[in-house]
Image 1 (cartoon, rainbow, N blue to C red):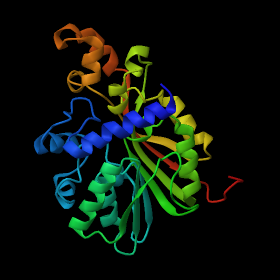
Image 2: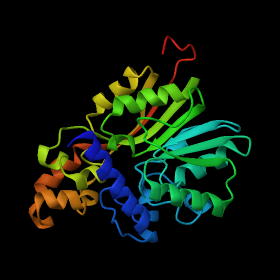
Image 3: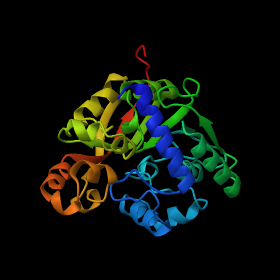
Image 4: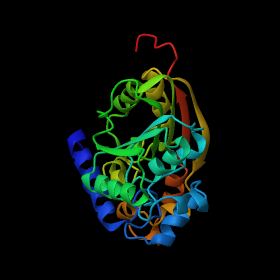
Length: 281
């Protein structure tokens, strides 16, 4: 698949999710799932009930694979940029942490998601949050703007992850931090699954090998690159993923394949720092 085709598939897929208020990112999440399934997913990946209740209704679509805000150590007055901000869930949690003297900029390439996020910001009266239309490979943010960049299960969807991390490096102030929750591979997937558009929108086929992901961060100039937490995806959450079913057929026929795939996919929380001395970058 060409990069343009991938971006269109992702944009169209997440536009539909925004309209339906469902979740397609995590394996086991239903695209037309209700509130209870979204809350179950969110609690399972690290969000507290208090956090879920603190944001406007409709901001949490259950699209993440971790809680980067909980690990970001945000401080009052900081500027946060959220890559792939969706309906605004993490942006609103970050806004609470940085306070009125702080600022949060959410970037998303899906107009339907931006409409939803901006509506949620108005509902919640978030004066310190703004949402901008743009691709994470070409951030609509000035150099040295952010104290911290967060992202939640989005960079894996990009066909040019190296460029995403170079852009993140550019946008961060010297000494700024990167805190990302994402999907990576521990073993390589079959070509058929990787080529599935549904799998790409579902955060599966866009994933790369873990070491390649970490190397892309280092290659952009970041230091102190490390994994804070890593969890593999259990079989029961993969079985109902539409892309997996499309590839393997009926659920009762794919137990062995599911075991193999589930041991190949991991959710990681990655931390990195832009050097205080810019070192030529």
